[in-house]
Length: 61
Image 1 (cartoon, rainbow, N blue to C red):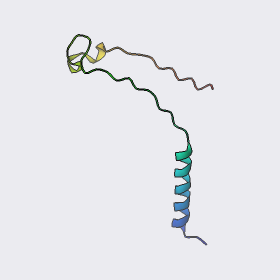
Image 2: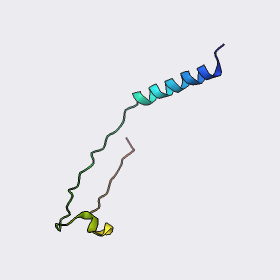
Image 3: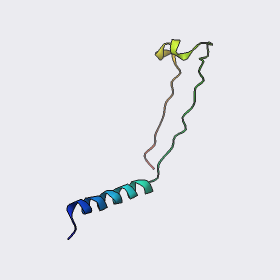
Image 4: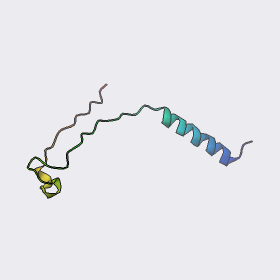
């Protein structure tokens, strides 16, 4: 009979193996320049003044 620690270690390794085999999605993240469109640093801009976008994720299939 196997020790409980050994059994848990085997289960942990199997979970890690399944996790590594699972495909992952890498989303492209746009890079923003250091200067805003007005010619000064973005840190000086109002956070609500930045351009915003919409992301739609379709889980149907």
